Length: 149
Image 1 (cartoon, rainbow, N blue to C red):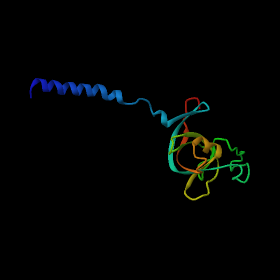
Image 2: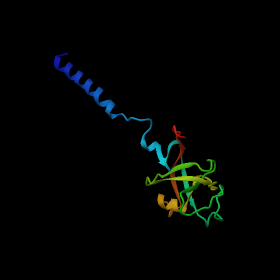
Image 3: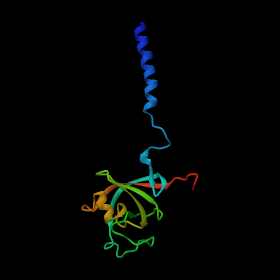
Image 4: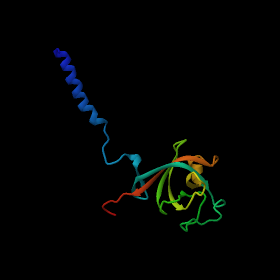
């Protein structure tokens, strides 16, 4: 092996050692896995994927949810079969990438094959109200404990 070839090999190795760490991210989690809401920090605890539909005061047979809160057609609330009331979730429409953070305030959906019902206003903001059903990703958000909590 001649000197030029050894020099090239050493130069490539040094360049790799310098460049690889600069490609790495720092911190405990990336920005997509953390959300700030109402002055608190939340992290993604689990993810579900499936079909979501919308509901409204008219289709809910009234204005009360299972949590006792009033249902607003324009609120950022949703119904889930098992998540605890008050749970924050980030719902993302898989077809267009639009997302919104919502609070679980009701039970449902009661149609087979669906994992979430959102208010009609949320469905409009997510871009699927006219279709009625969309494939969504539901990220369950848990509050991160800080020293002040």
